[in-house]
Length: 151
Figure 1 (cartoon, rainbow, N blue to C red):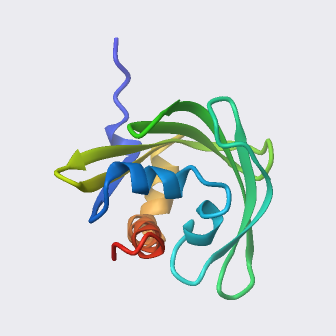
Figure 2: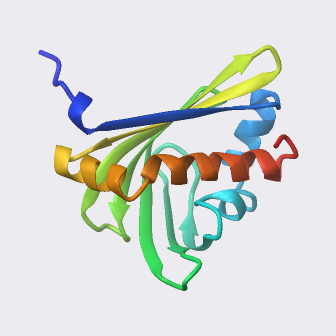
Figure 3: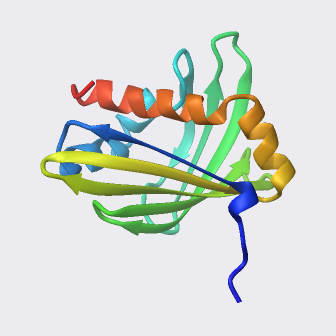
């Protein structure tokens, strides 16, 4: 039996005019990832980063107004240049709020990056949708494109 998650799944994508190897490299690089992760005007302050299957990235996203949003990504799958799966927690070892994935698809030298989040509940999905999580996620992918010179 397959569990229906359609009422709590958010997915969006961006085509970046760069090869998968370049996009993947910016994603899986401890120096570059914090420079582009997060919506426009946000920055990241990393406490710990281990970008491999079984690893973690513990960081604060800092909003333009100085608000701190503690985050913890726990990597459950890292398939080079293809797919990353991770669990999103509210702060280090905090409550889980979503399962997430990023996929990387070669489009004749460009890369289609798809981000997907499956929230714990439909209410959490509606809350994220309500504050504009899709647009903010697209801004994040735009920052990724800019950092690799493909915007």
